[in-house]
Length: 339
Ligand code: KG4
Ligand code: ZN
Image (tube, rainbow, N blue to C red; front, side, top):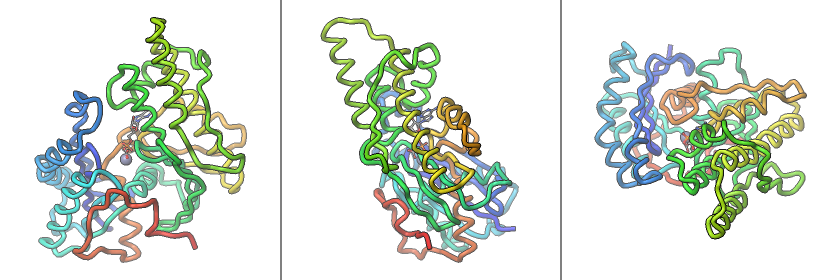
């Protein structure tokens, strides 16, 4: 049994977890900063790093206590090394390094998005490689062929605003709270998804890339026009139409990608995977493709997912030395490849 203590601090959640064999969650502690950042309508990086500093020791201690393990029973320490806010990442990376030296255990650095994908193993014992992952977070949208731990082939990536970013920015313009995705989902319940035909960026016919900046600009222009003309704005109808525009593109490209790769499984990963409309749309596919997603708590940022991804690296003895640094813009999966 391999027990990994994992730490995640890339954005606005300070999280620690103990994971056994990459699949069993012995503890999963998350200290969220959302109430703090809500006041400003988005994450304030300086405040985020300070709050991580204040929380990290207690969060790790609590994760250890709830796991019922002692530090000496831990086989490795894993940390998110990037991408994310550099000041926030540095807190987790520095603390993880210090723990690894003090405990004399191997140190594992995990790509945040690799964590989001592997979160699916925490609750789906039936899941096995290979599969197609639709990765949709606040900073990235992508369709990634996952051959094995460490073997990835991106089919398509964000060209500009990520899906979560579009949700957050449009929500802000609508006067909805941060984070925007859940707020738009909630407002959309009372709206008509076909009221407004906002643009879908399908891009070139063979492209699996995603682009949501055009949608964002179109909604912001529409809101400005309404305000200039003193026309009423129906937040529920706009929210429902925006959600429809985002979900339609994500779902259609994901299904097309799965068909072209000949796979029967799509896994959802990242905060936007929490979106119920997205799940429903994908699940109603006529091609018989199985759709798998993590529970809400494992969709948004957490450390259990980092422990799940770290297990693959542990098995390959893919350890970091003490030169490990936080990397704000760690490119997607450059340190991994598909053979
Ligand atoms: O993965 P995540 O927690 O952090 C990043 O790695 O970026 O994703 C956060 C993003 C935010 O943009 C948030 O608005 C979005 O996930 N999100 C949602 C939902 N819940 C969170 N978007 C749509 N529907 C949701 N229910
Ligand atoms: Zn994330």
